[in-house]
Length: 267
Image 1 (cartoon, rainbow, N blue to C red):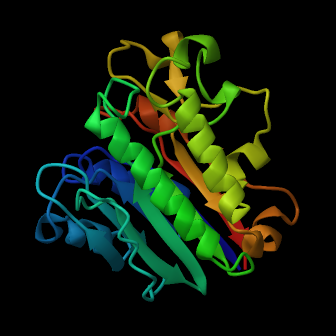
Image 2: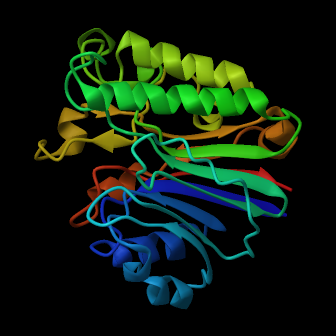
């Protein structure tokens, strides 16, 4: 069977519940991972998504900021609770779907100064990535695992609008690129979106609200990812990777600054 998984930093799920419902109707993901839901568990608009055919949910909410959730048409089973955030933020939630473990992350953005000594937010980001890397090293590579969400790093030269200029900007600095490479190596992960759209094609999933026309300026970053363990390669890569950024959603009315990303598996 086909399993379609999508991830989306929604930047307030209550504000954009109708957009989520529209995306669910148009793209029919079986599982949708949301980040930056910006609400407590009890404030999450469950009824809207139950009505859309997604009755199974895992929610890790937080007042005012952060927060992550998993919506599913299929039953969800428990997965390890990865307590990786040293600040105690609601930044991760996991579940198993059809035997596949899905871990959904909202990694800290890291502030504006790419110096862990001068900027505690940047230090927090690097610490989160290091803890996730340690977790990946402990895992059995044969076990089916998806690491997804807003990982807040554009890891490649063609994942940013200007590699040269962005090397000095948080999200694409050398230390962040190295941290992401270490994470990928630790779990021997495959980046499904890049498997489907190889370099040197530029590919973005985030565009600033500052641009009046995001397509015209196209100063984007690829911050949203779907990575898989070796155990999922046959399901994801047989017949070629099917993964994409839904950049058309970024043009909807009152959009999130992130576009959804999806991938298909053959289980």
